[in-house]
Image (cartoon, rainbow, N blue to C red; front, side, top):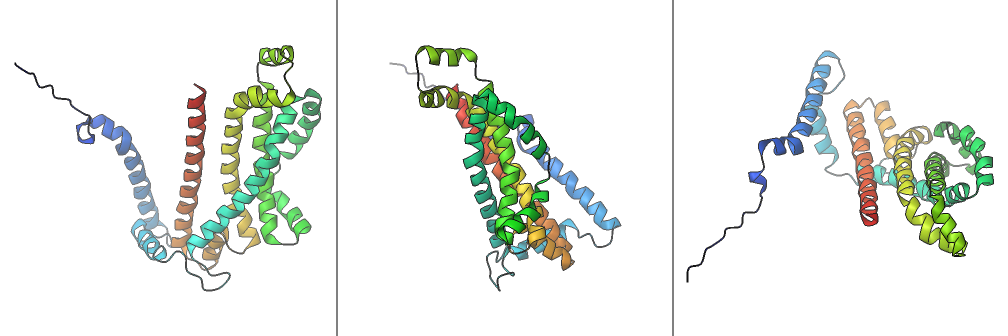
Length: 273
């Protein structure tokens, strides 16, 4: 009996078309190379700006021991990043704990929404750093004052996006809930929460990005341990290489935070489909 052998070809990375490779890796690498070239040109024109190679060598030395401790204000870059992330986590967590339920209440009840609208419109444009002196006055310490600034800047996107999502829930859904005489708890868990979840995640993503931006500036003003204080301290020491390294670290951490929340949002969106 003749048997015909069928060969199954599986796609491999080496078999991808050249344009696919270019789209996945080539264009981002070209963009980074352009930045490096421009950086090299600027370093050659302006005295005091380190070259990319010198900055890379400094980064290698810096990350050889990122978790050293030589005193309360002299710790490795790893401890500074973790301290900033901890402050962001606490302030952001408190904002989510208050802001998301507040957004549900504001979006659910029209009278409360009308009362809250002018207050939110008045306070939301205020720079988070403008709240920092008030935090220092209230808490008498830099650590809680920085967390307070994170809390203030994080809460508005979550309130606004959650309230907007609740207000956009189709009226037919709520009318059916009234016909079925569903309790408010059942309306929340079965109708509002599934419908509003994408809006909540969008608010969370905006909040965490804003919180990470604010903590750097807040730590420059309050001092202590943190990536913002470390950056400012390196400026006082005129260590420009470390300043540039800090900029890249801040950008990388912000990118990872945004990527993590974006992946979470996509997972919930896929579950809804």
